[in-house]
Image 1 (cartoon, rainbow, N blue to C red):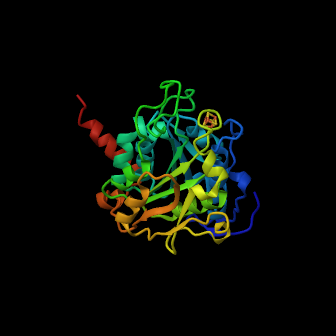
Image 2 (cartoon, rainbow, N blue to C red):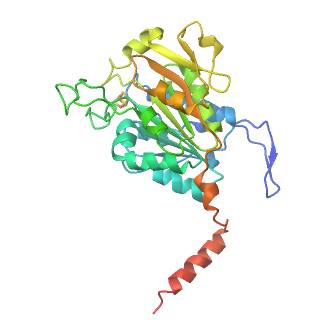
Image 3 (cartoon, rainbow, N blue to C red):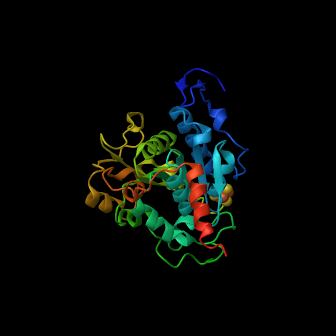
Length: 317
Ligand code: SF4
């Protein structure tokens, strides 16, 4: 860690720490070679470095799945929880410690299946955090079962003749929830777009939902193969209030000018299509946030202990 900048802490001590990438790097990632999760991890560590987030004020929360190993690979606080339960844990953390930067990583099984109820209500509560859906269209950790986002007819260990159902669309599902305030989609194989999307989500005040198209070379290699090899399969949503990376214009020539403030258009663009659309679909910082609405008094740790003891005394015999 180098020491460059400085700021005055409330206790009067000067905090002159400057963080490098290595200050955010935890354990060596054990994902498969070629797994898209590696590039998402790197993009996230880059974001923390650029924003100079203090590791002790940053927390990653996950459920169960390949992507849920994420907190182990960050040198921040982390909570590797139960399957589908990352969002209620993260909500509790943020409500109790609004000063923390809260990030959630979920897989498609974790978020869209067992955690779907929590997902819908987290969008409605609109608590300030970044929620990432790392979507490889399959249960990877448990060795290849059909997930809610597996494309119809795509074979898996549980449906070897192909998935019976049409996949759930995480974008239209999120955009359909009352109080949705930020919905974006990016792809892990386009690092510049991935980084800018994470950055926009981090700066959003409210619940920022980002679906990241993620390659899984073990179970779903063919799903994103065309999108990786043929840039024409991708359509970039661009706008002054959205994401526009001029350096990518030469590669990704299919572009749609989309104002992220237009919810109806966002829903239309998020509908299933034979191309992958990347960018910010919707952003509205005027949506109410649960932490502002409930207005609980801020209490010190001593006051909380005192209140807890008072409650326990009520049951004294
Ligand atoms: Fe990544 Fe797929 Fe391997 Fe899981 S099984 S670590 S998603 S490549």
